[in-house]
Length: 364
Image (cartoon, rainbow, N blue to C red; front, side):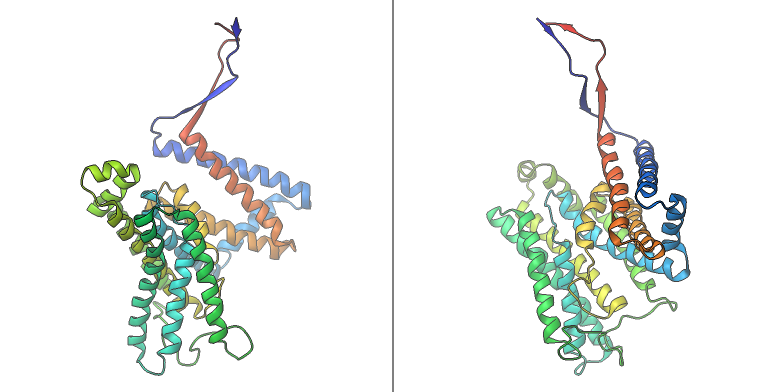
């Protein structure tokens, strides 16, 4: 009986050097740009070179655009750093959005409820503590249920996002200004009570510096601390972790308190440093985008800087395309989606290789 081999089969690669992995990602990006150019020409008739120039201009076209881009990178990176410890532990925390909104709500509450009772410095201290605590609680609830009753953390954290969104919507009506608007507006615009300090005349610089320091601390924590080691062991095998004496339940709860707390810090930076308001969309979807950023960077805080920048660069450029060429947001989202598809797809070729058939037949 003759048996024909399959045309190809897929096998796992060994360890790929970092430069080879990034070369594969670079090739994927080049291919994505070529495909985007073809799609742009066919659909709109626009010159793709002009479109790419517009993307760059949307990110680096002026000093203000540069600062806004790096502010976007900082917030996205902050939330990505937050979810990474949980991901390393194989706890799929998709609740970054809700945990960030919990921090936003806590900061706004301090600014509104304490402005007539405490001096500015005390309000800021309360904002810092309450925002981190609120985010930690929002992350700790699903962790507790996971540790005690093995609930599904993906669904639990996802549902917590909706609860946080509706809580914010409720208090936006309670604190609305002016009455009947359904919006809070700029909080303490006249007095600036609860506004975090501006460094060097740049309102975004504080966020960038805080997140840069956090990135270094998180890298050290995950790679060189006892807690980071325990997270990795639990992620590899809970059975092995228990065998060597690691209290898995404690690690799960502690790690999610940390993840939620850092998301709460992101909420503090949004409300106290840049936006000074509260809305249901203040997190901007970064809680979900952070999942992709963390995964693309292989849960490495340093590489997350690059992936966060890439995602923010594409987002800013897509918005600029819509404005410049009079195209709707859907077209810019198409280009962004194509680029992300190729970049995410490149991870397959980093982890696996395709082996084609040699020889037509084998005798069975």
